[in-house]
Length: 194
Image (cartoon, rainbow, N blue to C red; front, side, top):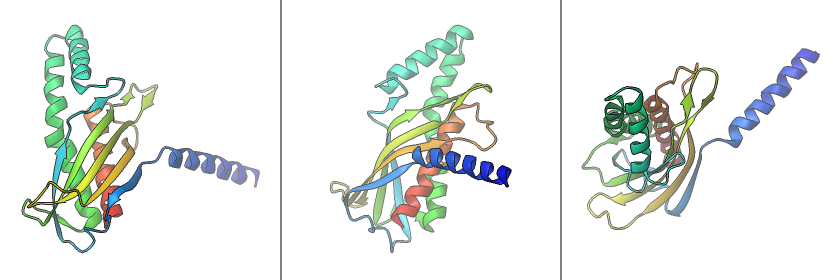
């Protein structure tokens, strides 16, 4: 009985700490139910003004990491910098879209009546060095506009602390951790708007 009580206490503490750091989605303006009866939506992504980790400007982060990796192995930093940018289209965006579609039952089409714009405002890349780890995390804003007239935001949302981690801890690749943060955001934002 003492063992069961101890296990339950530890479980509650762990659960409490997980929910304390959980992703938060909040409607900041407009009608959050605008997509409720829609079957299709267009999704676009923006990254301008992005901060990364302790760097206010993404360009500063890319330069620092490129220099660091090139010192260790010539050319490695340049390859990393290309991957940092190409991961958006090849990894992050498809995971977001897949999870959003699964959560909403909607199909993503460019000619949909409404467009969801997902703008990442900050990325914490995290790390995993076997003996120590920190999950990736993203913050973003998203808004819904009419595809034919994108000048007026019909609804706007803030997304904070979207965690990026892989079960089992085999997320040594930065892109993989960040990809999972986009997957979590797509799934939870999809549930939120639907």
